[in-house]
Structures are given as C-alpha cells and as structure tokens.
Length: 192
Image (cartoon, rainbow, N blue to C red; front, top):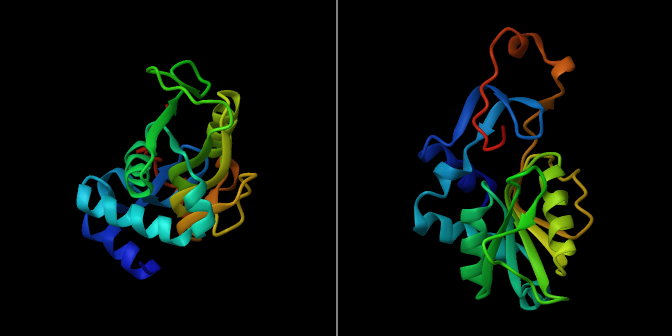
C-alpha cells in the first residue's frame, strides 16, 4: 500500500481529523489519526497488517514468536499482525500507570517478540511497552506500527517498521501556533 492509498483509507472512514488535538504524548497537533475507526473493519485491518508485515524483512518475520501491543490503541492491529504472522497476539496494559502483562498472559524466557502500535509520535508508549515485554522475559526483536508521526526520527531502540511515515507537526503546550492556541484542544486518545 502506498502512502496515498493509506491516507485514502483513513479519509474514507473519517479517521483523519483536523482541528486542535491533545495527543497521548502530551503534544498538540492540528491533525489526529483515529486508527480505531480505520481498523474497525476486520477486512481492512487484515489488509493493513499484511501491508505492515510486507515492509519487514523476511528474516525478521520468520523469527517472531509472539506479537505484543500496548493497550488500548495497539490491540486491534496487534491482533491482526499475530494472525498475519501466525503467532499469538497479546497486549500490555497499565491499570496502575505502568505497563505489564495481565489476564494470564505470560512469555517463556527468551520469546522473540514483535511490539506493534497503531500510531507512534514520540515513542514513549512504545518504549514503555518494550520495557514491560523485556521485564516479562521477552526479547523485542523489532517494532511496527500503522503510522510513524515522527517522519522517521523516533528511536525505539529496536528496528522499527511503520507502514507510513508522516510529518504532521506536533507542538509542546508552550509553543502552540496562534491558530491552535486560539481554540480548545480535544483529547480523542485513550490515555487520561
């Protein structure tokens, strides 16, 4: 899938929003990608997972023994990546502020894991998820996402395979352009 095809998929389900948004990272943006709407159709979600897997080198795909995603945003695409790669898909969650495996999910020591996200902006959630996977005994061999909002600048500490890289500018609260500062920010993400 090309970048234009993927953005067309976002637009077709009103998942590319424009306005003033407070992102999970704490940064502000005039654009928001609502991946939950994009992935709500199982057939589309499966196509997107297949496209992500095709961006990964064959040797990486063949080594993956489990897929783990951060809750909430990464659960759907993580599940579809597990299906695409033929491995189990689990998720980490943070009911008390720190990511960890729950619900009986466990990893055998040394399990080779692909960490999968929906959107990566600063990489904070991804790095926290990777740390939780490693604390549970897994070895994160790579990360993947639907969108890399950093346009290739984020460092997750492992090879990273996003389906698309976008350069939608983000701003710290104290550096908002006047058009954003003049409006109230909406927080459509899953984090409080």
